[in-house]
Length: 260
Image (cartoon, rainbow, N blue to C red; front, side, top):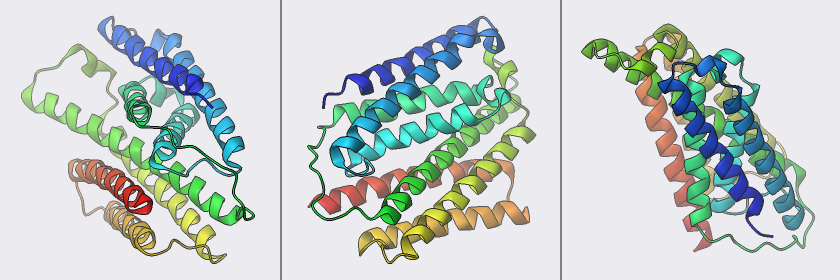
């Protein structure tokens, strides 16, 4: 299987980002349907590629870091398309395109592992666990994007140097609420993913089990901090960004250890 569909998807998200920048310069972000169509086409190409990859593997295509990065990009794009128009037409939506583009560029830079059909029957609960967990990672990624947007807006307000794209920012209160909701959604999905694995005795083994529990505890702590209101929106934004970076590093480290 070649990378044609994946390459087409990556170019679509690049086009979406380019159109977003052009719309921002002209202050017509809300009147540029090409951005949505570019991202939608990128999502369709992603879905086609993942379907073909899954058919070749005979299971959910999450067998390597290469596959995880593409599936993560697909999760981010899915949540972007499911979000309301207010999200898609704000800078949160604009930042989604380059995030997916970068994830898939890293994947395209890596060698694509060869796949073979599994000899033993595929455990449906394990596949569900893996798929839901990566969709949760997509929600965490968007929470990081919301946090980054909040910090950029706060910086501009403090310095009183308002660029043209500032007027497309949602209010800081709305950004904080989006960050909080995305963390809650991601944590709920991650919990469901872990339960689906544990309930059928297909929990991770060794290091992967510890890492999964560590990520769950990390975001659980963030959920509690957001829930009790003992954390400022700015600190919550930083935590969402750093937690996602830690998540990416742990996924990368586990994949390396698993292939040793």
